[in-house]
Image (cartoon, rainbow, N blue to C red; front, side):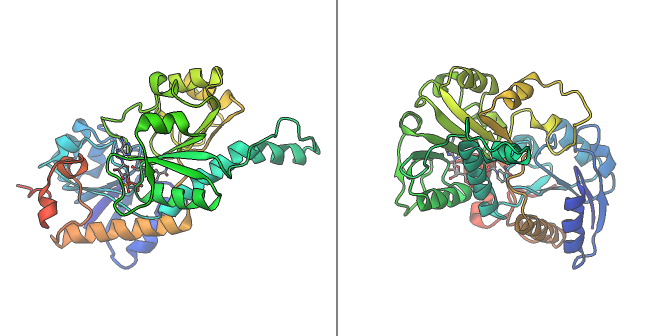
Length: 347
Ligand code: NAI
């Protein structure tokens, strides 16, 4: 079994190589992202392993299929960067649906606490022997209303933590968690009533720019937004306007709609040409992390474990338990997998 692994950093390599000790597959690690131009580097591989900012549109899929690749193993949960409709019937796609929802939920909370209590600024001040509190005023999370958009694995962990803080939780999800005691409301009501809004839903064609000029106008003045899901859930230009007029009181962003150009890379000696990103970074009530929410030891171990199990199932022609196709990923559509069969059979 030969696998070309795209978009790798030293930490990916460390965890994937360790897991491969029990498999002995032939691994080729590449730093470059998977794009239509780089897909041919997988020539002769049975599978490719890809990540969140790889460009897996129709051209890439064609190039992979032409190179003999029959499986795309995403080493992440989200798959909005894969053209699932185009992939159907041509190449199998598997993912890691669950690795550590705690990692992402905890990072969302860390960002919220940092943004609110301004510990990032305090840390820099005290190192400079500045012990003034001016400008560091925060608010109690206790008693505040948090609106959680998406109550899947991560959203539910996030809710548990928020409840521990004594926050009142409102939830919105087109598919409410069965048996939960969550207070589900319509999106509009959530936006109007929440002091803090945290996004925990996947990016789909239906919810692209879920937070836009119109929906941001519904927010309570000064509401805080936390996004650890996908950047394009927020219209960045509209967010900047809402930050400028104070409608949004702060934003904690682990993801950004144009992140693929810079996130995960050290650009400290370059000129950043993305004016929107630079504008966002310029606000003192915005904090940005570089798609870091998943980045814990436990999550990387689990990602490696599930990815290799996915590859093994493919090698052994077993049912791919983590296979996805457009039918099972588009809510409400039925897929063969629901009958315990592969999503489709490759000709
Ligand atoms: P999940 O599949 O367990 O839950 C997603 C929930 O969102 C489901 O309950 C679904 O019904 C709901 N949903 C779908 N469309 C919605 C909409 N328009 N409005 C509200 N809810 C909607 O997924 P999980 O594991 O909780 O992950 C959520 C997202 O977090 C992923 O799709 C991914 O984009 C992001 N993520 C980010 C990471 C990071 O490092 N920043 C790491 C892992 C995931």
